[in-house]
Image (tube, rainbow, N blue to C red):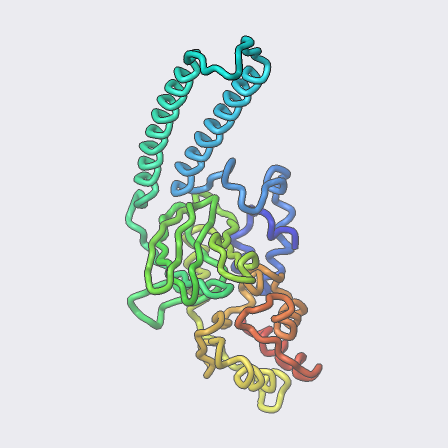
Length: 357
């Protein structure tokens, strides 16, 4: 479970794992072995020393310049302060105002140097903004990401509505290709931020902002809402899964498939399906069934995801049932209510949810 805190995980067989392992939890458990010591030591949102895409690299260099200048200025000011403390003024009558002793010259010099540095930083910042404003080539994929309190709806646009893919909290992209992201908000102001791939962009209700990202190498990149949006803000994370073009197409085609109903009438799974339609179908969608809600994540391929509740819990049957029963305790204020279930209902609902591959 500690793998959630690696900003970039690039297993050698990630493409095969993503497509072969049915439970997403199995993928999470399979990841630790290829992770080297340097990656394991990284912070989850370490963008100061790491960049894995052309949209984040110029910003990283800008951060280095700002940090370097800050250190130099701090050292200069500290040195001047030490000199001022050690310097002895000549004795004089405190009741008299003497002539200016040259101190203003230092003020003029400091003001001039500060103005020159700030003006240079403004020009450099504008050059960085221009460098990350547009991708190097026309994006072949457009994704709409909508922020909710506190999760992410992710929709892969297509001219044919039947080919549109909807998922949640997990953004898949092909390696080496720019991806255009349209950013929306369903409630309050959020901010989309995958720091090792791109800078942060606001998601404002009633407006559509745009951003592009590109990953230079396969891996799993951590993202986070970067605008305080309520009590669950700190638990509103997402993952960007960068994979080869072949693996991405394989994943997208699998996501387009609706579910089938393999349960016999009167079976435990059939009871669980009816229970889901009665208790959950008004908010959640499962394509291929009557559940068509849009107020909560699409669960058509729930088991293909690594995490639950926007990165809060590992996607295992135990954690899934824990989330259903104790949602308000685990993420207070979320739209997901805590649902009271008997042991029989838990077993039936778990059986049905286990088929949403």
